[in-house]
Image (cartoon, rainbow, N blue to C red):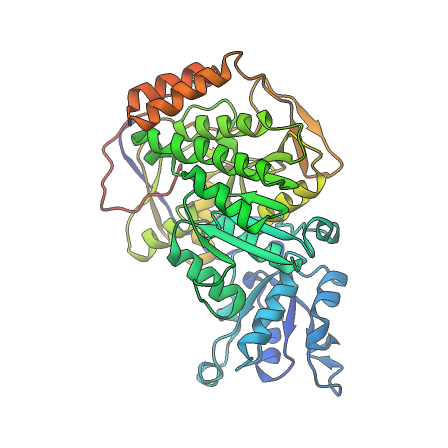
Length: 497
């Protein structure tokens, strides 16, 4: 396919859509102004249901009830099924912000803040500062926050380790795990800057000499043994991975080193250290893989299954694309639209499964509670979404009237449509309505020998040998050449769209 350009004209304004249930912290002037704007304008995507305020004289503000004091945030957020907590108290101490955010995370609610009081004095409308994406319009269904109180059984009072903690999924795992008050949350990443940022967010301060942050590379097997032996975690969430599909097509050896051998390094170390639960994050690209990314994640799932049956309860959780992650569609769209560039999409008919990071991580925690060992769980992603439709809805919410889309062609390894299950897999129900099981695909009878050959090819940085070894150990891997095009490196490009 040659590069094509189309225009989506006159998108106008967004419809009312489904709005997120919102709790406003602070019933003062800022809170009142915010409630007023949210009540007037549906397009903000937030539906205020009440306030929290420590003034006992405040009972009702702008026809909304004051549901409790600030200390009641967890009780109120749970009882009222709150999706978003907005902090509308200028100058709220950071320690209190951290406490409120931690409590909100326990029920999967996100926390947003108004700007400073000085900024509020300079304008009348404050709702624009809370303007959020209407997720229902973007992905065709309502965003659901799903981490239930039962998750506390495997987290509260226990030591939890998260690999890839500085990444999009890993950092959200840390936020939600932290909300269930673990005895210790150990955050592991090879990028010290991401760890610094995450620790600052969760603790209100960031000292990398803290014993809760670990700078380490999952490719280093001995280092993984050392970390597991030192911290003795009871629960491990393995989110560290290379995930950019085009990059791994160019560098398949790196994909094997991180996604396959790295997973085995962490898992072996966890089993040897007596970890109780190990949960690996996978992707829908592992179903009938056509890319190196999909093949390496499919093999990672098989590595997990290989270690089933011992003291450590092991499982993998497979899901599709998440909105808002680094390298994903929305940040790239923002960059392209802000710069006045064409929006790049691979194909007019390409579709993908989507959910928010908060949804995905909440369901990962549910799966961790649900597992009895060796499962590959698959999350309910709803119906696939055409990327062109998502771009149009996103532009509408941003008020961009004319969007120019340049179709560039599918790249090597990309599918026009993803699937959550392989053709040979059966979708099995679980006790959770939004989590399914994928019936295991039998591993190759010479799995161990073929894996050694794969690791050896990766160690030698022999890309062609790695591709052949992937196909040998994983017969369902069927590379697709895509519709190759000349990519302009100066333009931002989303991962796998």
